[in-house]
Image 1 (tube, rainbow, N blue to C red):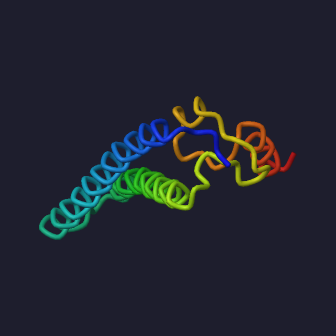
Image 2 (cartoon, one colour):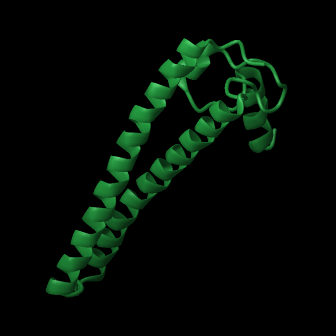
Length: 127
């Protein structure tokens, strides 16, 4: 069982709600820019020069990497909300220990305590 108080959970929920709204606004903005770029390309035609085309493709891919990260953040927030509803928020998914309030303030969607997160990252790095 988590040692978080209801007040702490409420504060962390407010932080996540603000982050969720920010991430969704960024996703919407990138999608709208992509629509505008496609409309402009349809009106102007494709660039004839291969360098211009390559630069354009790079410029178009960069926002999608940002969107992928924003989508991951939104999914992490939804996962944290589910853990709150299930009563498992603040409990490490690996060792079952508490995830410290300070860690959750810095990273409200954390699923692991700092010790288990370091071990998880070490394993993923192949070490």
